[in-house]
Image (cartoon, rainbow, N blue to C red; front, side):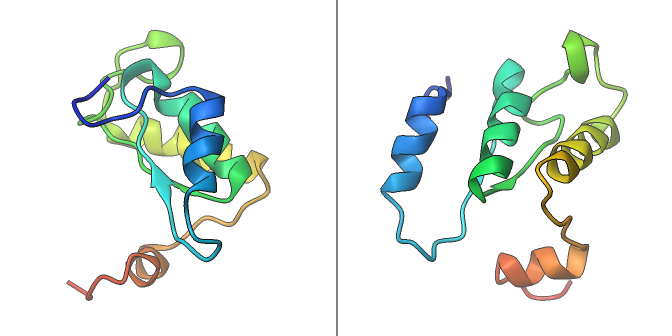
Length: 101
């Protein structure tokens, strides 16, 4: 667990989401072996996900990731299996209220 973080459990995620306003935009960033289980839960619950080597150096089944792209591929499958739409970079900037680079 990270300092200031909440341990990942399905119950914790449901509780934390319940504390948000109904129209809140939220996302999860699971660290280490919790990265993909947290991503699966968030996708099912309507949240957004973030993956990358800065949070987890592994891909699926504990295999050392060759790059963040491997984790992005897994995240893409998670989102598609949850029957959610993938956001384009432009849509992501809009969701996060970021300016165009």
